[in-house]
Image 1 (cartoon, one colour):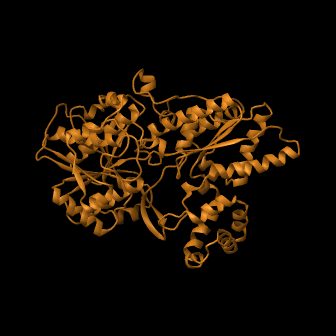
Image 2 (spheres, rainbow, N blue to C red):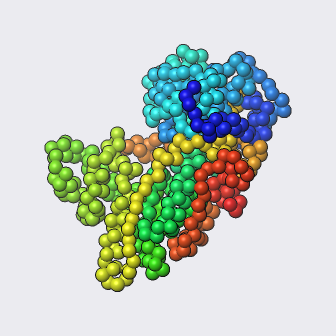
Image 3 (tube, one colour):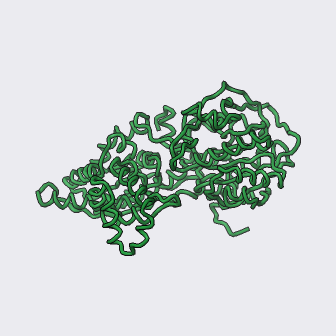
Length: 555
């Protein structure tokens, strides 16, 4: 075994807590709810998933004593997508769960994500291997990947991999796209009479895999605590040095849950919530005006410093920028050949500006050159702009600097403006899970094992009532089709699990909106400090502000 830190050694001894329903093992009593519909487009979803559609919600309760099942289960597990703290505990929960059902059960990890399932690259996860990874961050136990499972050829190869290993069920740990693919695989197996169960687990630090059934995706708690520690440290430095404005971009392309949670934990002077920007149809210039206004008012108090939080996906929520990006995506796809003959950046920029509509061309021309180039050079595999690579914080600073310079000339601004930029992303994805995520993830894995033992397929493991003590958590399975709708992607209608955006009428945003003017004017910074694994429950087992507010509990 490789050398480990003192904290890792102590953390390995932590015993995750389980809901009452699972305390006697994964063989549980399953209560069936009513038939379910989908989140949207029920007729289309029903036509795409005739064998899974309408399944009931399953709720587990303990049978009162540990029971074994026959025969032993062979289960495969896949980590899909980006890393999130607690993934190893999900796998540990699956392992312990199937072993509780029958000690002869075996767990196989497919390597490198879904491609490992398709290509039959795997390793058996023994007790020694599992013990090495309990309560640790990362996905390095088997690795992850972003291969999509969506073709019949892939499904057939997955079947062959499972048959080779005698696998009875597959658990796919991933986000909305990964769980959609899990449902597609489950449907294919049922339609072809293949007796292999498929279960999903909700993972993403972005917090956008959330709905009436799934209260939180795992990893969100830990990641937000990591980012909030760093933001608090930066805020304290700002309040000490009193000479810098810190612009901090945070993970969260599709939703602003991380930015909102970190704002609730740290009280920055400004936090932009992308969903509010879209709701108000704000322009880039208006966003810069709002931030500049805070800077000017604080300068009047001789407070030439502050903290600004920016979600990485902000650009896509600004209507005018969204239009520009859409035009650029279409243009770059259409003019690939013409662009290939232009080697000089100036020629490319001139070519692009001449092809855009008048409004988009004017907006594009107003952007800093560095951003202009990022918008046309960094493309994803589908040829689209990689929004996460756009340095929005630098864009805003440049615009704000121009505004402040004009205001200084007119006497409206008397302060000094010096900015520092930060991007907090990978720092939070593989942190050692908080007690909450360690417990939640272990419970999710154990629940997945119970769903397998209960012969369910096409379900996502759920653990609810998360604001309560772990022993009072509820657990069971939600039909993945229940969370689905249809969206237009790359010119085709596709079944998807709808992403959860920040609810502007929800309690977390209301709490933020109630306080932000005070936070803007004064130095109300909170300093959460590092994640605590040992000590009083009020610190070590604390939930996110978002979860507590959504549950109706004042954090």
